[in-house]
Length: 113
Image 1 (tube, rainbow, N blue to C red):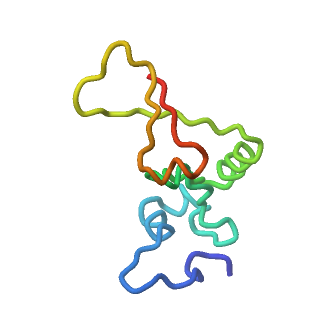
Image 2: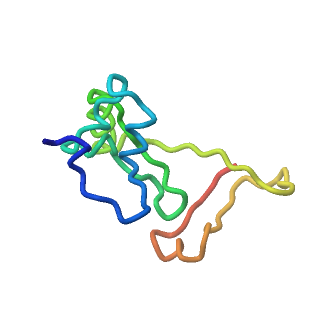
């Protein structure tokens, strides 16, 4: 009870992230990834409208610490952007959506260079 083996079935041909985490990390190194009650260690998907970086706690202590940081607004994000072409030396910020749909959801991104 409460283990990944009891997780609901994925659609035909689909892969579950919890299966990947169990295969990628051993049981001793990542016990939280095997527990349904702990949502298999999956904490949060950051920036879902773009790539959706996943925040995962492999061990219970790390998972609970990350949950506390999330719930108390302690999580900060820092990005590295690779550009094709040249960036003008005078440019200090990029204020453009990744997709037009992002503007309707919270005002869009602002990237400082």
